[in-house]
Image (cartoon, one colour):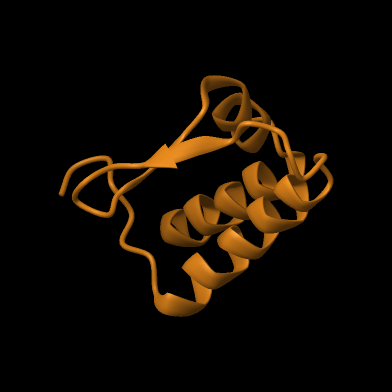
Length: 70
């Protein structure tokens, strides 16, 4: 798998809760993305940027990486 880290359901749930808190702070009519014909969610570029910029999510992912190194 190379540089990838498999996430358990608990890890993914914690990350998604962080993202949800960020999105919930936005006005309800903010264009946030779209759902394609295959059912895949695509975030709008500015929403994706805001999500990636989440300090809490980045810190959580860093802790996962460090635990792998130990």
